[in-house]
Amino acid sequence: SQQGEEDPQALSIQEGENATMNCSYKTSINNLQWYRQNSGRGLVHLILIRSNEREKHSGRLRVTLDTSKKSSSLLITASRAADTASYFCATVGVSGGYNKLIFGAGTRLAVHP
Amino acid sequence: SQTIHQWPATLVQPVGSPLSLECTVEGTSNPNLYWYRQAAGRGLQLLFYSVGIGQISSEVPQNLSASRPQDRQFILSSKKLLLSDSGFYLCAWSRETSSSYNSPLHFGNGTRLTVT
Image (cartoon, rainbow over all chains, first blue to last red; front, side, top):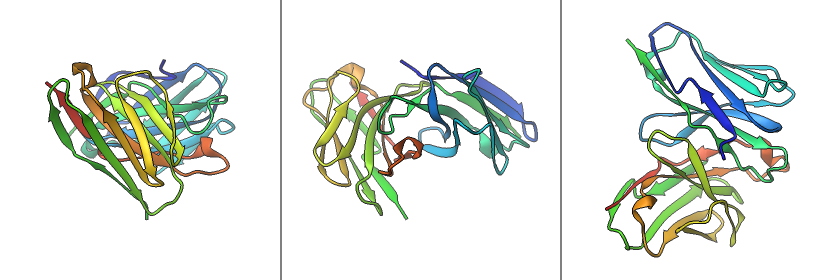
């Protein structure tokens, strides 16, 4: 079963706008990770936020985590056409063992020039 | 730096034929290794993971098997492919650390398998 569920499933914006994607999960977590996938390629790790962190930044990316609501959001500011990709959240359960990341179905982001 | 190689990039195989996908990692030792499958427009399904040579854990009962003959080599196999085995197969590695839960995954570029 999927642990993380992204919302929306698809998002279409213009260059320069901000893009916000949300992720909800079901069980307690140690950390939550966001990945990006260009069409037909492997996933690339973007950012990891630990369960005791509330916000994290990396360049134009801002990730928030609300463990009380079991949700996270990924904000891409001043989007570019090159940001067009699918974005996935992934979580590891507290009792999961090893590093068994469970991925959601992803948000497909299209940034139009 | 670490790199991961996965091949072939695309594969078209008839139903009932065998399968062998290979993944190798360079620049690190004793990595955790993973095979995921991605259906079109969907998330990733964890198929197998390995924490060491000969140590394979299967997440989903299926027509596939995995082996790790060397520390940095991970192979996905099938004796007889089914139509439902079509998909995008991704190999990944992560560091073996004392806090494995916090290690990000590093993915290969995937193999697009079409079973006809």
